[in-house]
Amino acid sequence: MGIASKIAIQGEPGSFSHEAALKLVPGAEIIPCSLSAEVFSALAGGAADAAVIPIENSLAGSVAEHFDLLLAHDVAVEQETLLRIRHNLIAIAGATLDQIDRVFSHPVALAQCRRFLAAHPRMESFAAYDTAGSVKQLVELRDRRAAAIASEQAAGYYGAAILEAGIEDNPENFTRFFLVRRSADAAADAQANKISIAFSLEHRPGSLVGALSALSALGTNLTKIESRPVHGKPWEYIFYVDCQIRSSVEGARALDALRAHCGMVKELGRYREASGV
Image 1 (tube, rainbow, N blue to C red):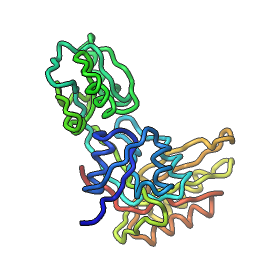
Image 2 (image 1 turned 180 degrees about the vertical axis):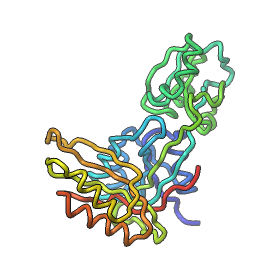
Image 3 (image 1 turned 60 degrees about the vertical axis):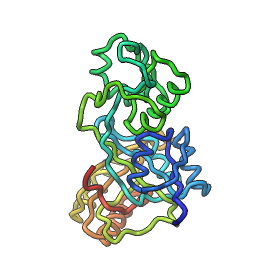
């Protein structure tokens, strides 16, 4: 039996990132990190073989910090996956719903369960850094009046009980995760049909239209565009795009087309598009 891959995630074991990591790399050894910057440091420093990061949620939008970290490090996206996000109200074993007066979770999870919390006004919400970490904390404290919002996996991992399952407002709640490796270690996928690219533009009229028109001329399908400010350069931006490609050659042509219009172009990864959940 081979040695399990070490995968860095932001958050505690039992988190949605943990679940996504095991979906991407079954049997992986999970390295939990408190901060996203620590995830990338673990990867860059060799403490982890890869990292799994959330990049976009279908309801909450993009995880902006992770775009910045992908650009700042010598890494490449190797795979992506989609994970259905199911939120549960979790408490210590033996606690009952009518005892709960405080609920802890990540701010995004709390926001995605507004209807449930509004229907239980006795429960006061408190933001925490991680969904699974909230479960870990309440189990350590053995507080019957506290609950957490997290995944079924978190409840099982920490030996807690689910009081209410599926409490999210919208069932169409999915998060897209990237599996990221050091650029030198990332494996090329001959069946890659998607490319992620970062680029910067000169601050002049029509520059973005010109860059996107160059992609359009190739017949490349743009599926996402995101902008992030350039630190220290007010009103200048880095643009991040995802494009569907029909071949690796088309990916290379897309990069060349952008280079004709952009001051900086960086390929973040060429990988297979996630096809299901």
